Each structure stands twice: as C-alpha cells, then as structure tokens.
Image 1 (cartoon, helix red, strand yellow):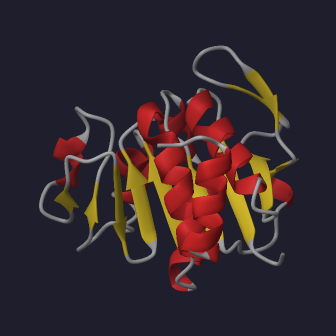
Image 2: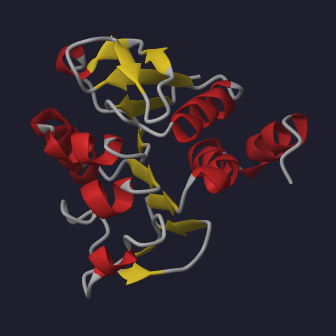
Length: 184
C-alpha cells in the first residue's frame, strides 16, 4: 500500500494516543512511521513509557499522506516549540494532506499554525478557549472537518484512528479494523 502516515513523538507525548493510533493504522497495511522530534529515537511519554521511534524528524525529507500529532503534556508544547514540526505541518497544509491532532495538540499546534482556521474541531477539555473566534470548538470525542481530524483525548483514540483510516483508505477497511479490534 502506498499510503504513508507520520506520527510525531515529542518528549512527554500521551502514550495511548500515539501507540494505539500507530497500532490501528498499521493493521491496514499503510506505511506508518513514528518519528521523534528530538535528536534521539528513544522518546519518553508523559507516563514514563519510553518508545523507540523509527527515525528522527531531522532525517525525514518527505511529505506524508497524513500527519498525526498526539497530545500529552509537555508533549504538545514540545511539538509546538519545534521549527521542524512547524515546517512539516505547513508543508502538509500546502499540499492539502490530512492533518490529525488529538488532546492538547489541536490547541498547542494546529490552532497557532492556522490549520483549524474556519474549521470545526475539538481538544482536551480546558484548552477549548484557545479556539477563540478563528475556529469552532465542538464538544465531541472526534471531529472531522475536511482534511483535519481532531479528538479530545486518550478515550477517543480508537475512534480517532478509525476516522483517519476512513479518510485515507475508506470505510470498508475502517470497518474491518474496527471489527477485528472490537471497537464499539
């Protein structure tokens, strides 16, 4: 399968949001790369679980079909502070690729970069005031608006991944993954 997805990992990422999304997306046969935002492939999440990424962002020179930004704190802040993340997000925006953010990532990364401008979206409760007037906050687990998918937190991760699969390769494949993983 030629569809490529990049899941960015920054120190302090929310483990459920990253690993569950990667797991469910890989079940489809898509190429899913976990890419570290730091200079090390080993990245520690917000609950002290260390994951080894496939590569570091500094070495990535492509534009994926989808870019996934897990939340977690300080993970979302670390994503937002990275110039390379900003460049990749803007490249994906310019090429109208799918951009998916969950938890704090919509508020800390997608909103400041204008990805949600004029769109509907959601985020972790408490960060919704970041939406201001540039985007419409929706109190929901997952919100799809065009080529942007947002989710509010760890409990919405499975549905978030299913929506990414639906967008990229269709509802039939998403239904298979959902059924085999026993997702309600």
